[in-house]
Image 1 (tube, helix red, strand yellow):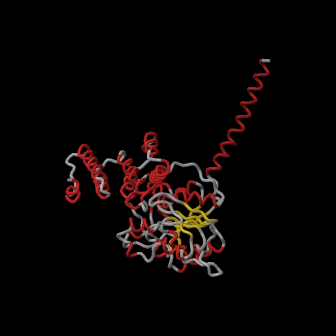
Image 2 (cartoon, one colour):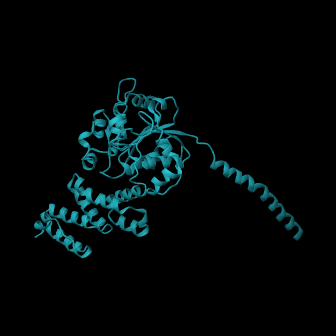
Image 3 (cartoon, helix red, strand yellow):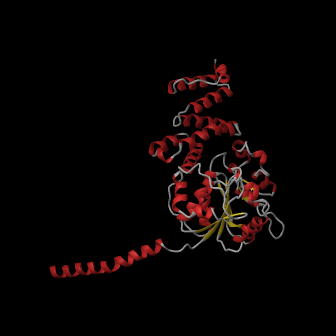
Length: 379
């Protein structure tokens, strides 16, 4: 019996030595397998003289990395082609650094394909990146519009994010109907444009939401700043920068790719947390921050706290946003935010709460002082 066991053990060892190399080769072959799908990423070429009016680099980075990590071949296209502006103000972000140092993204931005040249290529999908620049050239460049029309007429999947849907407002089908007519769509909203683009909005040739609605689209959206992705058939549209990664994944699913598991980008995770807190209560912030505070960006929490109440449209929403503003104050302690809390309560005539926050701020911040205009109202 002992001899039989020895023979079996030897057989297993020999079989393992034969199988393991082949398994290793199989794993290697997966790592180097060629991309099965190809996506064109369209960005604005506008803004060389005014970087604020260019494409949004972080939107490009997040979506590019989603495609890259899912083994998709990527072309970056701009209306005229060639080199485009590359901002460096967010280089400290991990995902921006990854894009610039571990992918060929910078090389592609130094030599983007023109829309005219890209029209000769076959793509499985089109992804239109937002940023202010999208409203200036994408809807009006003849070759860009002709190229996008090819996708629309062949029902090839299209995703457009933030201001990116501006590229779609003038696209018409063979029967003369606008491509977006009767479709459920989304974009950076009218409220968001007027809240966050005040310094440039007078330069805009259009407000994207207004134009989409004028073309007969059914515009649907989340509250300002919160993520929202709409899908109508093969058209995917997303509201704002924190919706971009999910829109990229939705596009992958549309072309038959199951996105690989990933950790959400910090801005994405933070706004998703706020959306959850809006619907399920501020305790969601306590739960999330107690488990993994490093996953969230408190600056984004504060940004929402500063604008959420101001942009709320109904009394019920304002009451909800006021609660969230209070909850966020527990995790973002800063004199400016404290001043905002005091100002908000004075604005609604709640001097008692304003004084309470003033006293808290005096304890938290050395030499805390209010602007004279607010201090006078507090007395």
